[in-house]
Length: 148
Length: 107
Image (cartoon, rainbow over all chains, first blue to last red; front, side):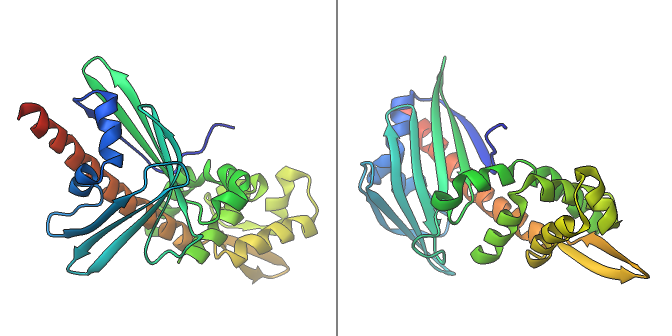
């Protein structure tokens, strides 16, 4: 069975993988792009960039403070970054998993971000992985039928 | 919300149940029809359907001597909404990152 992917976002960025990778772990840079919104004010961007280390990124928005928690599982510069992730109101333990791959291109880097939703991915990882393979196909069909 | 999604994904984590949902995606089916492709007993099929029902993915109704099942897409729609929300957030972050790096390269 292929690795199920629930959400994948890709960007080609005109800079070497090292620069793109470092942007995610340098608080001075991360605070300027990660979870930043046009009208929000970044009030906290703390990053303990080591395996097992955590990060807290808080942006003040009209709707309230948006708090983002990260827990690093893999820091393989400049190839791969993987962390458990949750945003309030998800509680401690209700992690999702984010993996970012940085591939060198002739003129820059292809960044591929994968976000897997599994609130209990540590306990149910294999079981849930299997479950994801068909979700999107089913979803499209189901939604069409429900709306149609 | 997260607990409900967890139930949805747990229900989807079984290939038999996914195949049942795929069948129901085509329209209403009796429990017997759902059991048929798996050489499974009525009781075995009913057990899987129970999991799908508790996850809110399937509704059952009686039609004469038969029980008919239909797909309920609401929990899937919730998962879909979650996906779209985060897709938007990551895209916005990556747009900003690309711009930031572009600006620094020019400077």
